[in-house]
Length: 313
Ligand SMILES: NC(=O)c1ccc[n+]([C@@H]2O[C@H](COP(=O)([O-])OP(=O)(O)OC[C@H]3O[C@@H](n4cnc5c(N)ncnc54)[C@H](OP(=O)(O)O)[C@@H]3O)[C@@H](O)[C@H]2O)c1
Image 1: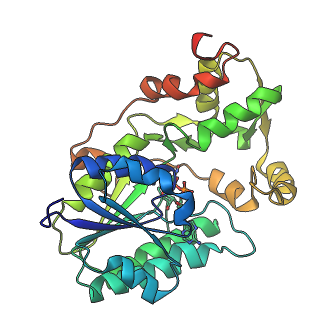
Image 2: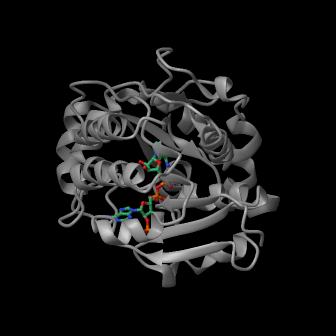
């Protein structure tokens, strides 16, 4: 290990995106300080680098001293922290707005050169979803506090261990039908996790004096119904696709949100009322020199386990 390598602080690296990003960064010889709530459960990250290249820190992201300890001696920072639904202890406003405020202030104070923040596609003023409102406030906090920041807004991210395709494939294992909230007309631009990881690496190398926003969508837009069709064809299952009006879905979501890992929350019904595609108002994946990967070239590689005959089915 040479001491001229750049050091990156990553918050939220133990999740889906973090795991895929880690390998991209270690291949480039970055040294990485990972802030996590539970380093004992994140041991799988260490073999993604050479010995000593990845260090784990037990961090409460709302404790500025602990966040400072992670940022100490770092050149760059990445924020991947996010939640899909609120719980009694975890609120959107804390995780998506307050933490970016604290982090961007501390990045300034600690002389960090670039902060890459992962937000979400579809953000707009007055969005009825609390998730989107909190992500928007997080972006504003970062833009106000830390000028050389880069904000990336991905659409649904797919790849091994994704929540989207894996969840619906699991439902198709036991259910004769899959729900199409609002008729399944909402459009998405699914993006491969490897492409988001590459975009983060490129964003780290930017040298901007003003905050920049990129919208990250894959090469094609699909309606929710089309995505279910692609999934079912891939796992070789025939299932009814049942349209559920938004009102009925909202009613069901009040009950579903009580599950430990809710399938649908009232806030997610609000999200589904709006398309989640690149708006054209901001630079995109192409501007980072990345050509998006097609779903069809990746999905078969990990979703085969849901076929009746598995890999050979
Ligand atoms: N996956 C997608 O389709 C998608 C689409 C658009 C935007 N995004 C955004 O991309 C980012 C990464 O997504 P992901 O899919 O990798 O999510 P993920 O698998 O759920 O991982 C999120 C990470 O956030 C951290 N985290 C959550 N609550 C925390 C808290 N209270 N304190 C500290 N850390 C906390 C967790 O870190 P520890 O458990 O290590 O502490 C976890 O590793 C998120 O900001 C998400 O909103 C994702």
